[in-house]
Length: 390
Image (tube, rainbow, N blue to C red):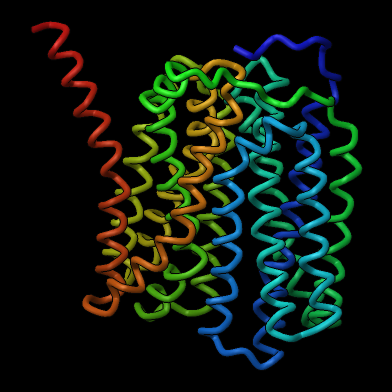
């Protein structure tokens, strides 16, 4: 149930949030292709590019950890605008210089922008909608469309014009985020009850805890899509075009899973979240085991992607629905922090594992680890039922 507002939001409020997310993710998709290629073109090695990209994840994680405190001081719409400007700056700084400092600033700005926009946009959406899950599904769908269109256009721009033009093309939609963000309803900063009992209640809330682990599973899936999934497929003898096809299918089902989650009733969020964690982990583990069989690998990765998409919507919705209205921003920031941490930690863990086992085995281990929260949730539920009947 949405919190009471002093005035009703505009009927276009959801459209403004969606437009902000679409423009931002479009710019992010463009830069995700253009920045690594520009770094390689500027003489950086693959390993150095990896370190630079890790800076973005570190910045996002840092911002996520302080977002709940920031949203208690400033309206959430301001962070959406700031995210657009930071993303634009992350592209424009590289037009000024190709030095290491410019790439470092670019990635730090991009990471901070991502931390700002998703926590603030999700918080604003659930505060102005009667249904958290529907609002979050709309945010994820609009951002998913932008993440598909951005990379799709980046390739032709880079190939037929230049990387610099692709960076400039990314800066424009990022700067335009300010337009729909400025039209958002100005909500008062969040002011949750900081009493000792309230803090203890949120820490113990099974909804926020399970949602946080769901965010970690979804973050690990995305991190692998951006790193080791192509490597494992290539190692299994798949062609570049086949790898691209598998990735496209998985990304499509990821978006579809998040959009379909908007139809889930609030009372069934926990059950769907547990199922989504299991599907994501088991599907990913199956993909790792059958990477040499193209059709089976594509199907399993697509299934895993649909589960991860479901988690991206249902996880934050569960976190939002299981706390008091004034604590929703903090709950969403907590769940988002786990996702950001997984985006950073998962590649590092797998990188360590591949020093002692083959890459497919490392991904199989990660897939099994993804299912652990679901198993623990089921066991905890059985224990509670047993204690009630005992």
